[in-house]
Image (cartoon, rainbow, N blue to C red; front, side):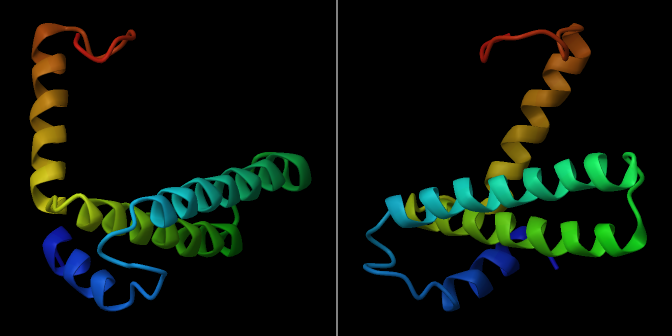
Length: 109
């Protein structure tokens, strides 16, 4: 599956208020799901000494799927294509790598 196919599928399951004209709902959802991922990772550290068991890998896989859904929904709300977002990000990171500025800080490095 590619990003565009996933995004098209995700759009068919976007059953939130004013879907297609509501950037805020998926943005807030992304924040919530990101928090869930972080909370699961915290529990791996706290309860399992940092060891990621197969059970936790599956739990995190499901949570990351939810994050991906919200990213797709935000992209759709902005009329952006996930394939083009991924390609632009790849090109940005490749440029940073080639220029030796992959580490550090600043959006325009």
